[in-house]
Image 1 (tube, helix red, strand yellow):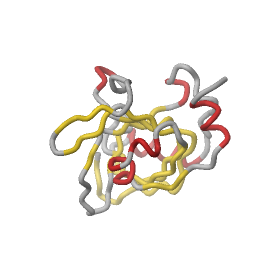
Image 2: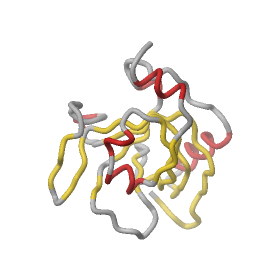
Image 3: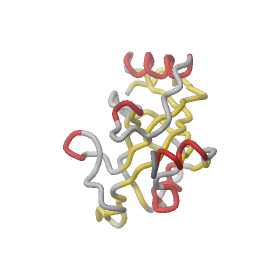
Image 4: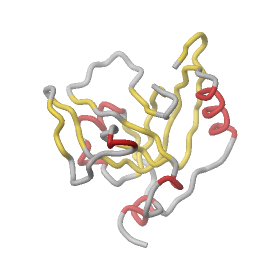
Amino acid sequence: MCGYAQIAERESPTKATLCELYQHPEQYVGKMVSVRARVAGNDLSIDAFEQKTCSSWMNVLVIFPEQVKPAPGFSLLLDDSLTKLLKSVREGKGVQATFEGRFDVAFVWRDHKRIPVGTHPGYWKKNRYDARIVLHRVSDVLVLPGSRL
């Protein structure tokens, strides 16, 4: 086992905001991160929920380790927080949570231009996501009252 898998397994996650990941993706690529975000769609895409504007942006998807090849070297923690998150998303409820996992990035958007970061063509179907978090654990799940996906 080498590369991302070894790195991810050995290190503690770095706390970051989505804006920090957007603005400096090269500092976080392949590293374990912990980020608070809002689920933006049934496919587990996430975005920032704070009102702060950010000069860069990317489509970020949360994905499970078994969906990644080669395997990332860690597994998904199956607990009540994950169950609560998945149930709420399935029911179409708005959710905020802390996502901990490996950050992979292909592109960042700056000044209305999609700028490559690395050589990956993008993530998920038709490479529609610019970055992904390969999920190790989810915590602090908050179902937003009256909010829908």
